Length: 108
Image (tube, helix red, strand yellow):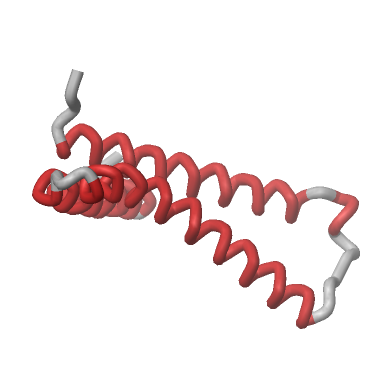
């Protein structure tokens, strides 16, 4: 069964949302560990950890959103690849708006 770019875009956006949510939850839980409350890493270590987490996260996010479209693009389906990326972007914007409005309690 062949999925449409709209469906693939939604799945990719949902996967990215789940990854970001899991990462944010993990960081929050690590901050709450009583073992780490008195640990104050130096500024250099903090910057290195932040940048490494950022780069790893950027790699994972780009793989989630661009992996399948790159396969399509390399197999000659350039139009479908572009449509998939655009649908992923549209779904991500919709998710951001939904989460933002719900955080502001404008929807629920």
